[in-house]
Image (tube, rainbow over all chains, first blue to last red; front, side):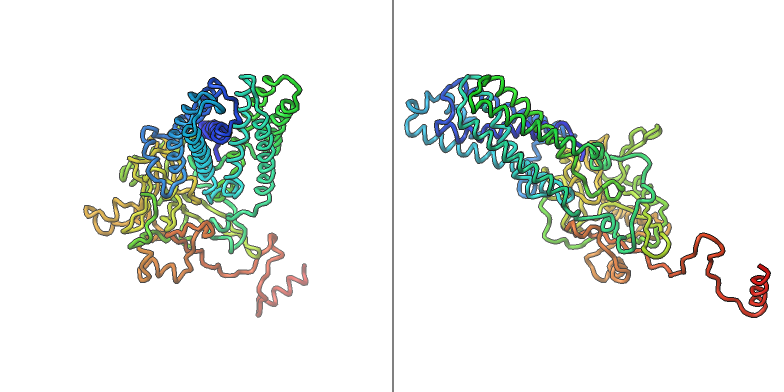
Length: 320
Length: 247
């Protein structure tokens, strides 16, 4: 599948944003994040900014972005529509939550019971909405039976875990910017990186060993007669279908790109965060370095997610 | 609304005979000719007279070589277009409601005024039947010539899809596949009409008729001396023996 930059940026950037929101929604009401209005405002604004930039970027993928509002109508059947609705709905609780959190005077003294309950409930709904939105994004891909590498039960958990791990790394870096990194946040980031890295390895093994659902014999219906091979293509040049779904450029480099993704996206940020949790110093540069690593890693991961996915229409063109 | 109808009153579709298709691409050309001026945006071409021309077409004809384990290889020409599936995934994935399946005849259409050009419907189609038009930025697909088949301004003989009307070897047939007594349903029943990629669960309406079994001829070798000649009798038999002795 053609890796469109707008879609890669959208899913990774909004993933980081929703990961951050999900963590803040749980950790802030429990008093596990720094009780600092500046930290809170930067974290909330950054998360919403990443999400908004991603959503905006996704409209560049559309040929008629002026009609994008219509995409909110078919939530009954379409995961793309559900994602759009969930993304818009989640702005409500996220903004309210941010306001209460930022302008509250502090967890231990400032909130009365009502405010505390409101923050807790809003935080919970922010986390749930973030999860639903990322899950819907994943299901856009996972629901496509035509692409075996996407129609896989590990795809939704992978999207959720990658959003959580990249969001945790970013949130850690924001906290480090204010010189107050809670250990629990670093531990969550380490755990999420380990789990998502493991999921990714399991996913690669699974898609490499999967038996294809369709072959050129079933695609043409001629398989029972013998070996089917394309003798002559229908057209001399390529067409939109081949450009969009017959992407074969990276296949010979897949193993190399996988190693890069694993090293840069998972091992390197994990190592950076380890230095923080073990108190080896250089907390700020290490936290920011882990953001650089995890961001490059997740963009490469998403690029690969497209590049290593092959669509069954390729069977007709001898390109599967 | 992109939810699929529980059932359609009729199942209009095509039956394509892979036995008689000669791969002339007349259906491809007539489809383009009719549909570029018909329903919705025209079917644009890019760099049409240049070195790398591409464009939007709703019908493509592949040619495949089939090598059976025993016997010579065979070429089968294979027209590929929208199969107007009963469980059309292209309809349910559409976020805007632009992609829909008609309740009265089962035709899958795109409302081009609502299409945002996201391309997701084309991703969901196993058959590559949908092409995003590079000029109009909307998804194009076979309409089963919806602007011909009900068109009372056309002579009755022309009220069928352009590809069917033009096929010189009569390899394409149009009718109601939901009616077991229609000529297309009878063709499917008598010739063992098949679904493409049934395992994808799309329940295609269009059917393909497999090539008829070739008469089994004994495989001939590559050199003349290995030819299996039938034994000759009479004068030719005597000559055969005489030549054998001389050689």
